[in-house]
Length: 100
Image (cartoon, rainbow, N blue to C red):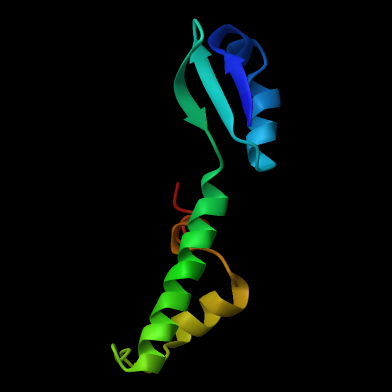
């Protein structure tokens, strides 16, 4: 975890954004007091998504829940084929890039 003052962050923003993209957490300070935390959201979303899937699978195996079954549409098949392992928000953005 890195710590950076506001002035240095402003002057070297690209460098710190690159560190965040690489998985580093950056604490932003103002006169020695931490005022913000910069961290990647990609990693968190992916981990939460996997954890939710694992919990649901365990609950289904134990009989606590019964998952809904539905027929997969052509659109679902195309999305899974063209955008595997992407969160829905990113799929939504990618499928609408031409609608600016």
